[in-house]
Length: 374
Image (cartoon, rainbow, N blue to C red; front, side):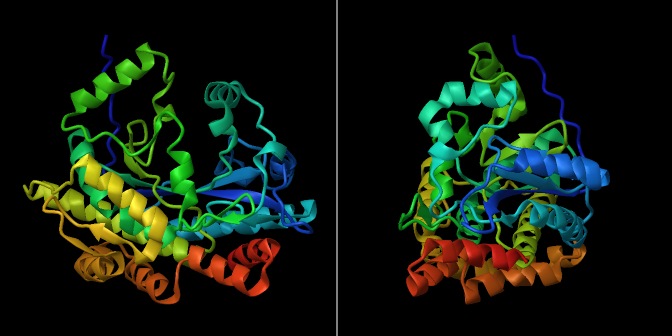
């Protein structure tokens, strides 16, 4: 039986951000399984922030979240306040917040699982791949007014998947090696059975039938266990964009949040105006994901169903110009302009490689990532 999925539409294009951090030891730079101790201190010292600091699968990870925000400046200010409150506590524990998509040398076998049935069941099912998930990302929610808009916007948004991944790529190293990928996180995460690229449904009823099949066959118990790179969040009334690697600083985070907000709102407005939104075949979207993960800002991406191709940074320059009016309406002109700075100055994966090439020490890479957030 197919159960209807209600979409609690948002009256405005509201914004919410979830930012995953690893905890690293101040002395060794290695991952620290100290999240439980941090949560205890948060509850004791800053209980007002407790709802904005979440547990994750492993005890080396915390997630900082915003409330429902109007725009990018409000969301970034919200996160900055939580980081400031948490940093006093992490300093006391001898650990740092580490924002990249992967850790350069940590070993999965020494990491501890967060207590809880949901996490234990995930590991029981996924085994080796689940235990490998030393990965961190940024998730951005944008409010959508009606469910019938969600799937067309989601499918069209996939055209910009490589742009978002290339800009945010921060996971070039894994278990002591340079992987030669800009985003190894993107390749790792899609190994989980309900993760990876979303299906491109054309009607909400198809999505409902898919969820019903997933539950009937025991693949999921709850809709939140669908871990697509972009997914509907019906109970929040949002589209959740989960493409990005972990961000290493607030400035670049603000750029990606602004870009996502503008992209979604632009597609929403075009749909409202009666336009049929463009989308690409799943096999082209899949190739674009791989190209961005492998080559980052040097990726040549597929632009459309005619298979025209272009360097991702060239397409970004044109995209930013087109989105300027939307950015003015969403109060994020300054933040959107910072996307261009990432292209000019280089993304996190490039900076990490430069540090390692100069130092030959992956601990120096950890230090550089930690320093960026500070």
